[in-house]
Length: 90
Image 1 (cartoon, rainbow, N blue to C red):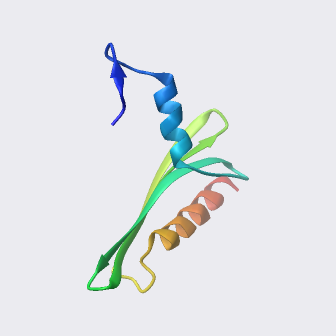
Image 2 (tube, rainbow, N blue to C red; image 1 turned 135 degrees about the horizontal axis):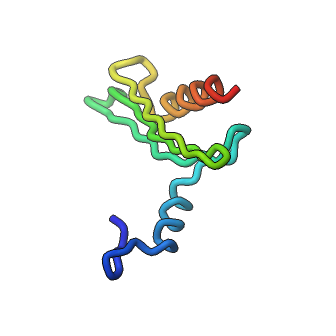
């Protein structure tokens, strides 16, 4: 939730959220994101990574979701998302 003052989201609040989601600077831009891994009965059952990348003046979004795979984790979803982004921007 973003704090709202007089019906407006303050720039400092937006920047604080961006800072908390910052992953790294990579060759194609600034990468922001959030991962997660779902576990059922002690086994990884799904993994996801929601990503925002600032590439030049443009912003792109990508969501990666893995289900019922041997390696269904947020980390694996992140690796796949970065491979996809690198293939798009190379």
